[in-house]
Image 1 (cartoon, rainbow, N blue to C red):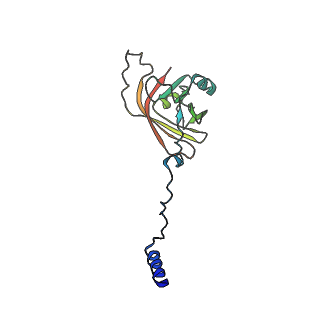
Image 2: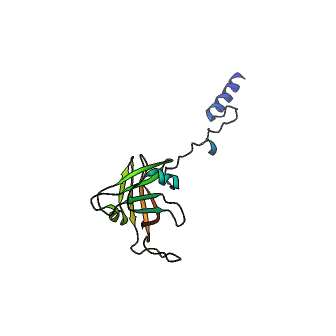
Image 3: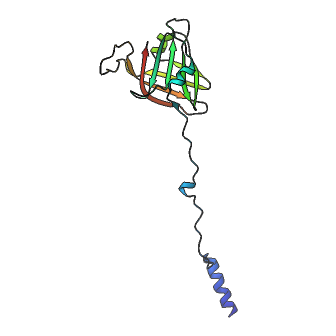
Amino acid sequence: MRIAILGAALVLAACGDTGEPTREPDVAEPSAMPAVEPSATLEELGEDDIRAARLEGELACTFRRSDGQAPIFLGRGNVLDEVGAVAAVKYGGSVQRLEMEGRGGYDAMADGARFGGQGLTLTITRTGDEPIAEEPQAAMESPIYPATLTFTGPGEAKQVIEGLFACGP
């Protein structure tokens, strides 16, 4: 009889059934999964941010995500060709000052330019040669063009933001 019991136990062990309920492998609950941090991006510049940036220059350019929104980029420059322009963006909750690469002042910035500083780089590129018509028709001193702003922050992947670029007094 012992041999029969021992034989039955061996058969069950060989089949992997120990008589205990099977346990499912541990699977993390969806809510327990670590949150993926979104990449930091440029934030809208408020009036206080613009005052704090203290940008100097006769003329300015702005980049907005869409009409009616506050700018995410403000650049100022003089008409002089010997100097570049300066700009301000808000990144990570604080206003950062950027310098235009190269010379050409306001005129170079108005055609689209590259800025850098504080570990940030951004390039504004006009994507159309014709200004966007405004209703009611504005004085066209500051025409609005479709544009992209290509932005890279410290340790961040490149972001391309579509929007509107306007320059003027």
